[in-house]
Length: 397
Image 1 (cartoon, rainbow, N blue to C red):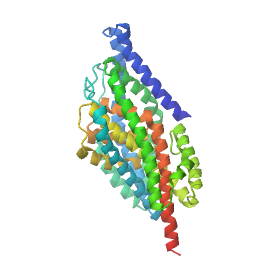
Image 2: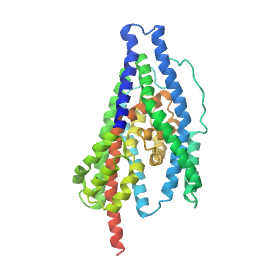
Image 3: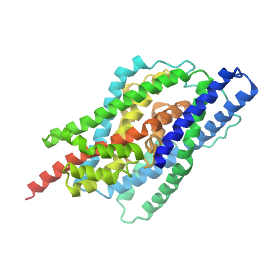
């Protein structure tokens, strides 16, 4: 239940930061030196943390996408290609559908927040430290693709081993430093928001986004099984009841990898061939992140609207296409999806540090539901791959 503890710590961080930010008004000391010092102390931590996170983002992209592309390239076969195509295709489609639904629903629900969260925090940190990333996000992406594809075509594995070691180092930094400090980082964000009087507008935005994200994730699950029913020419909608154990296991563990044993049993119960299930379910646990895609797409749109920006199709179309690729190699830790995508969100959507903090907070708050959505969608993909596998075996007879 370690991952569930992270969610609880996140909630505690939000509540604690909010209470500290509101305390100045409640106690009538909002202009006192002591209260301002406390808020500025939080602002100092969030500034330092954001700087470190910005430094790590290119390394996260380089290590995970390089290794992901290289390992995927070495597994090339018929079932693998079909599974990868289905995972990427459904991810991109869900991203675009989320965008169009968001364009229709969000403008009436989310208005620009007074004080403009695009601007820097009103309470300045005591000091800042400039640490430039080794290279830019897009440079990291292009370099990752080149290295990953190149390594996949090499006979040796020495260079791949180097990047695997780099991946282990980056994973350790994520698991031991960045992820544990996220609740404190979010506490600082909400402390500043509350102190500046933007709390209730921000909470309203969060509540609207959270509710729509959950609805879209449920609709995604239903649409995946409807697609499987059409492709397989068999009603698989009734098979949803067999995957409920996997959904709730993922909801509790917040980890697709930890849910694999339960997910395999669910696939067997839906009569997916054991060979196909044993291949597709573990693979999709790392490459099929539709729940994260829905959250990141809709969440980014909502935060942009609250910031007075216009989330246009021209802006989001390339973002969604690249997000589908990035999700394939997202780190397998709680919140890994937003960490891998943060570089794209910053470089392609123009998010500032306060906006990044909001998307991180939103993603972590619904990460359990996103993981459960991912795991449940894997079951539908397994049904489709199994159908094609059985058809291929019959054709070869």
